[in-house]
Image 1 (cartoon, rainbow over the protein chains, first blue to last red):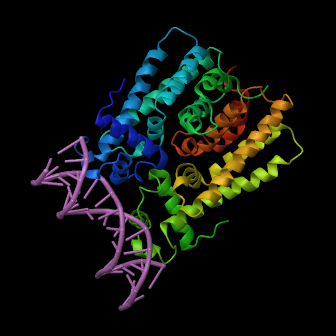
Image 2 (cartoon, rainbow over the protein chains, first blue to last red):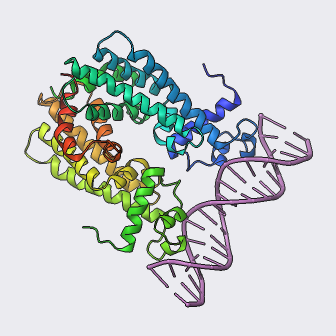
Length: 189
Length: 189
DNA sequence: GTCTATATAGTGATAGAC
DNA sequence: GTCTATCACTATATAGAC
């Protein structure tokens, strides 16, 4: 999918370092060391540290935005829509766990693209909220505060990358099998 | 509870800034500016930036550790224990949302106290896991992968501070009323 | 308790050789 | 595509005056 150009190597290594220590704590020298080159050499491929961050985060955010647009208008039940959203988060986490971490933890360090990102994220949450409210109106979803349900689901889905990448963590197959039931039905027997 | 000494003012202002931009992105000059003093003056009250971080995070982690020790040995059902854990997270989030954010986002920047923190966190998760497994064994909790349920609950509880502090967010009363049902029963009607 | 001045080390980024 | 050398600036932290 993504060609293994030098630029992409730099960006994906950066995502890995940002995941572990955060954007601000990773220096261009750290990134260069991890690639066995000197910091100055990075600038033959990228324009700035900020550009790397924006590339990582905006790419992920647009992927979520595009998929949400597909899902929200489908002629399926609320529960089916929610299952598709859960699968979307699992798929993107499995594909790009490092970028998912940046998306969650380092978005506030965006500069030029910050407002664009914040709007995408607000729209995504609003679409999620609307789907939940439709479900409540139709009796599919419990009649509780939709904000609590939204926050509970999104918190879990957004931090999947922590548990997916940790040793003795959870694998993709188990996630896909059990995440929908856990979020929709809870943990009680 | 906490005396309003100059030192505590510095620490609580630091927690607020760390929450917004992260430990690494906040400079001693930023912190000093926020307190309307010069950076050098901070060092009359604290020894280092690192000391501020450790004070914030270790204090929170020990509070969680102590409460979990109380809860785990009580002669009550698994569901009652889980409700007490949920309440613990809500109470500490309401009391110290800024410190909760640091605990979640900046623990990896601990230096001397890092291993102490990591052990406390692992023990907390292990106690939570044991409680869930007991619940499964006794038929109180659904017979699914306990790791998924643990991760789903902890992800939600650990990021409460995001939703509690945001405008149009969720208030403490609603959280206490609806969080247990949402996590235990899910969102399905 | 705060200040000015400063030490020491790092920061992102550029210029120009190979 | 990578290097060495370097610029301009910023970081944490200390010394000592008031």
